Length: 538
Image (cartoon, rainbow, N blue to C red):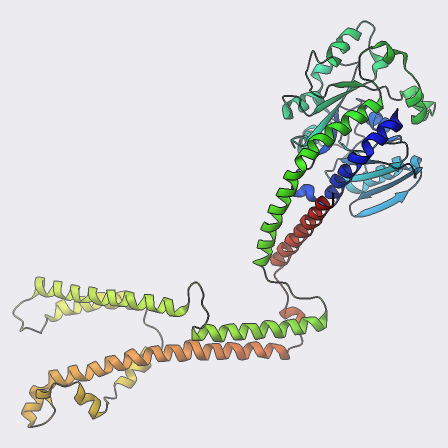
């Protein structure tokens, strides 16, 4: 009794199917594979007729490619509702309550997504039917497999359709519902071959055999061999379903009346599963049992991805607001924060991975190493090329060669302000007290001119010690003042000037890639949060 079947399954199955449908509608299938049922069949295999039998409404039918977009058919049993439907595609949602309108709405949706004609599209159309005469079930109808392109189709249309089908059935959580007519060589049909490729062990494939009334006399035994799982083994087995034939369609026989009309041939195949209620039961159980086991895994994966997405979002600052009043306040806050940070950075108050002071200290260390190298080079030349010169005096050519080589190495490093510094050093000046402190007692500048001249080397050495110390103090102070403090002051001033401009929108204009990336992450986080809430509520 279908009513008893509905009552038995509704309490446990309906919440689970609703959960999967809800997660698919919010886009979780983009993040994780969801349990689903995919309907696969060759052209003219009776695929549309099977779906009509299950749903109780007529779907687009005809020759060639009829299903041009994946169609998610959601069947919801509700004893309080006679019949109502909602179709959604490409952001559009249409509600209607006439079963006869299904064909028109589905064809229109396909024309919108795939264009008028015979082209196909991977975008999903969702058709939700709520009625007291259907069983709780959700499945996806895929385009029929074709081998030859017709007028208006690309030559590789067959490959496009196969790739679309594989996109759905390669998911190990997908139950493959293969529709095969009884009047063909079932073992060689393309649909069953594709199912075997993706499910070699046959653990998630169910075959529906259609058109049993067209079996050639004498071929019944071959069909029974297949149905009894003796040819191609399928763990979920085979079911024979008799749908409306072309004559019944031409005579406008209703689908409900067709389902209630017994078929003599079906009853002659004893011990064979037949009828749509068997299909309902098998599909519902096969979807529910593994899906329920898989649910904790889905929940765990959603939580893991949610943590990862939140971490990625934390690496990106919030974008500018949309309201004009909020934009100006946002700009003030950004400039204030920036000025505080740049000022603190110039003082070295902010601990960062690598600051300017650390870089300068590293450079100074390299300079000291270079200074040692200079001494080594001079000593080497002094030992190898020393002639009759007095100690302390070098051969001019040797000295020139060493200096030129060192100058060439440093020529690109010498920059602005060094000239100014040397101009100042041309003014020989220091305080007597400081100068005298650097002289040994025996070399104090006093006495005869002869004694003074003999002390020139010591005097020069003392003076240049002062010069070196002065440079060692002054250059870092100049760098700190002009490059750090003054630069930070200028930058802060320029930033404050932005507040007096009228083009706030242009100033706050964000890089499109960053905005798109943030929006993508935020949408993903919203989907995962919603899915996590739905799983928790179940």
